[in-house]
Image 1 (spheres, rainbow, N blue to C red):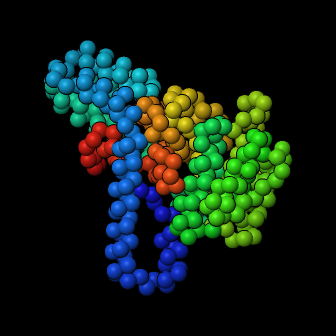
Image 2: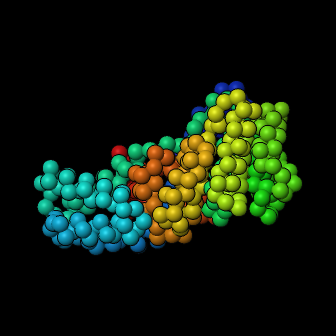
Image 3: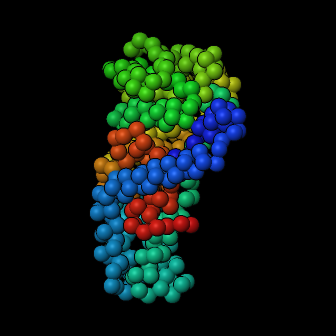
Length: 343
């Protein structure tokens, strides 16, 4: 499925009292299949630049050659250039060395299949979707630097959950950036969900406080909280995020369900440093990787999966509402390498 329904199935059961007809089930399954196929095509298209900059280069290196140290060195360089990261590139090539010896692989064509297998395993290491709701309101806090696509990600998530029949509430916690509140308000109106906001320059923690209590009072299913992406200094920003997190945690009486870090795929290796910095301020639970369709640096997905103990949970491959989807390692690898991969 191109996204895992967190609220939809339960809402439908409540509305229909468990009396769904077999014909309706078949129609829904067919619709989901078509939507999944549509997103896979978008994924293939979105990864075209990465395919050209990474896969095609790897294919060239690993075609019609004997397996030797020169091949391994060239492959390592290609992986690094695709923003897989030095540590991840060295790790993958070392795995290929080990397996080529153990499996007595002498031809590069055989080694290519091993590389795909190792990449899929690496992607699956921390892969997981958004957590399922356990207690209302489900609270999702969104963090990341300005320009990464936080507001757009929030808008697309609001649309997703609204489509599932959930009662959605947004909170404009980025009170420092000029226009941030208005931008989120546009998304709230467009999607048709409520918004909690204060004046520009207000205390973000106060917005968070009001938002959590409003979500409780209105029996909201999910609260999505925007946060600041830039203050005068990194210390100020991280301190502010920590404060907001503590306020939400206190008012909820529990930990938040998700704290998503939005990362712009076009920034390449900067994504790693951003993830490390934000994880020091709040307990980030996963990554939403945006603008994957606009970069040849898709190898950053491998670096994030290997070097950080964080799941890439969502990927964005276009401008449409439905173009932000759950990250599926098999679908990603299949789209990247142009072959069906099921493990």
